[in-house]
Amino acid sequence: MDYKAYFLKLLQEFVAIPSQSQNEEAYAKALARVLKEDLGMETQLQHVEGKGYNVIAKQRGTKPGAGRTLLLGGHIDTVTPSTAWSTDPFSLTIRGDRAYGLGAADMKGGMAAQVAALKQWIDRGTEFCGTIILAGLCDEERHSLGANAYAQRVLAGQEERADFAIFGEPHYDNIIVGATGKVLLKLTVTGEAGHAANPETGVNAIDCLSRFLTAVSDVYTPLYEAGTRASCCVLRMESRYEGYNLNIPEECTAWMNKQLYVDEDAEKFIDELQQLYQSAVGRGTLTISREIPYYPSYLFDQSNEDFQNILHLLEREFDLRPELKINQSVSDGNITCKDLGIPTILLGPYGKEYHKADEYIDLPSAYQCIPIMLRIMEEFFGIQ
Image (cartoon, rainbow, N blue to C red; front, side, top):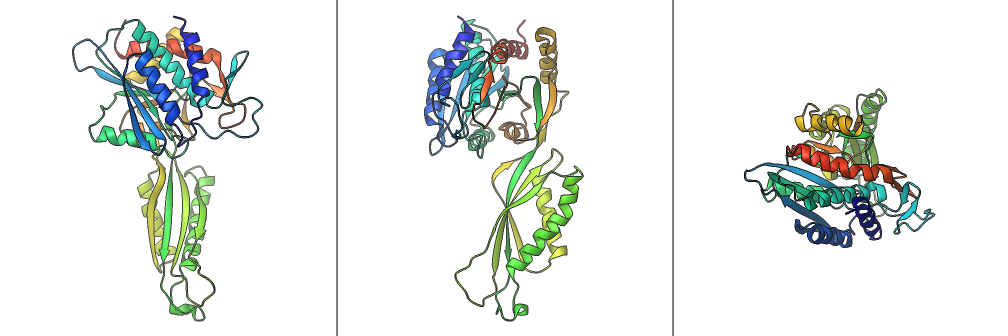
């Protein structure tokens, strides 16, 4: 079989299926069908929320023994296409070494390349001891509901925990070994009723929260500018207002996005905010809750044997020496690595214009990823 042609056929089929976040059902079913019918994998379609579905497929080795588990895959959703596309975003358009289409690079191309590598692995009848899991996860471009649902199943013992994970995000000449995180915080100040003509008779929640947010900016903006802390930004602020009266506002709420460097912890930051509120305001009560989305930052141990084997393989057999990078964005890898303790890298065919009009995948890198993934699987399971 020509596995490059098989990859291209898959990519054409996948791109033609709209799968924006929370609308992944059709693509999930198509992917599940390919994994079950073409590859003969043990496949489950798992409902997450609304039209969001995960696809979990497994190939179990026939050699006796417990073996090890390798997790492949990534997300199956895309962003919503802009109106600036010069081609049909739902029809793969090939121009030279580029294939244009919504999600072609981020990351239907990475998924198709991994499926093509698995197809070749299975067609060969490769004997191994262990399990390969391919996970197609929904909602990564929004809140990663799919990855969180998958993590909960692993923690509950409903899915086996992998020893290593490779998600086919568009990182070819660089490998993501860690990433910043982010947390959405809801900050609510509760004050005390009183007559607005005499402000001293109550505690104005709006005044308290405004004073607090100014203190947050004064403390954390210089740290961000110095590069020692990731950014924090207030996205929204509101208080109940039911028309003019002379009541002191008793409650005020703000939503804050906090990026997290790899050495930052969300709970520690929340504790710092509580302490700052007491010192800067000292009146009323501040309640902080962690909202969706939440992605913990992570950096896995690069001395990991599987990871080192991959680096040596890429250099030895493919003459690739990818840069090791900390991702400044987030992915499902934040969840599998930090919450599940699975060393996770992002490695897949690259492209350009992610989340923009005329997104494309570089076809030579996609074709190269097929033998790369095949050799990584062989290396992982000790097949010479």
